[in-house]
Amino acid sequence: MSDVYTPPKVWTVDADNGGQFSAVNRPTAGARSDVVLPHGAHPFQLYSLGTPNGVKVTIMFEELLEAGFSEAEYDAWLIKIFAGDQFGSGFVDLNPNSKIPALLDRSGPTPFRVFESGAILLHLAEKFDFLLPKTNPARAECLSWLMWQMGSAPFMGGGFGHFYVYAPERYKYPIDRYAMETKRLFDVADQQLGKTEYLAGGDYTVADIAAYTWLGNLFHGAYNRCDIFLSLDEYQNVARWVRAIDQRPGAIRGRLVNSQAMAERHSAADFDAVEDRSLFNPVRTRPDVL
Image (tube, rainbow, N blue to C red; front, side, top):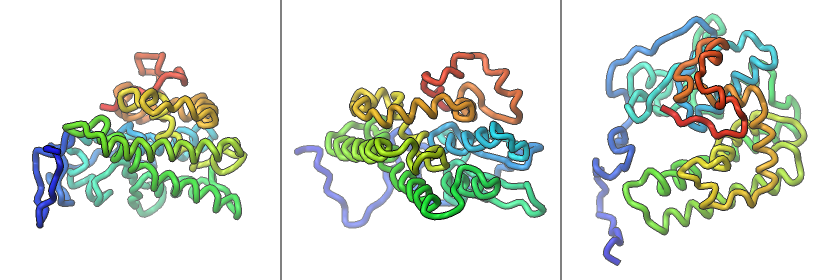
């Protein structure tokens, strides 16, 4: 085969081989420019984008506010990852891994950072005693499904999504490899949801928020209608679960934040300014990110 790749003895970076991410991907970490992050008036400052990992946190904040936790008010600032905003010095100070989302918690006397979506979900769940069981075995089950999602997301996003949509060329082997794994993960969830209403049992938890943003996104046709390519309608228990969460007001609002519909969010009144009111229809897929 003419396109068989023989790795060199020592790998070196090919700046033109990153597909749509070639302008930002490098094999090094750290800040590339000096950028001071904006700050708002609220206790929590979120720097993110409306990708599945980012939406986890905005749904969590909106669920908290929906439940009456007014002290969970937050400012959501847009980080344009294709433009390289995640490599500004202010953002790198919050997340040395230069990935969204990143959170600055100013609710106490000493502000501190929290990065990685799973860590932010856990931090907020514990801080407000919300959507996380207190005792085992329910707590262990919830944490297990949360970590299942955290470990699974790279196969769906950086694996299937990358090779199916973002890679500069399409190759059968990586697409087949990650399509198979994505369907296997859907089957894991489908089998569990055939036994329980939500992933960790009878109650909605942070594990559902984390998994919903990925499974729901693909189920609703992200990645160039991959729902058709992957026959995701086969997973009826996942479908029931996705549609139930689709209807939650916190999930509806959280999907809009840091997207084309709402670049930034600084108060509940910002939702009134969304011009396309059909975006509040829970059966519609989330708007594209900026």
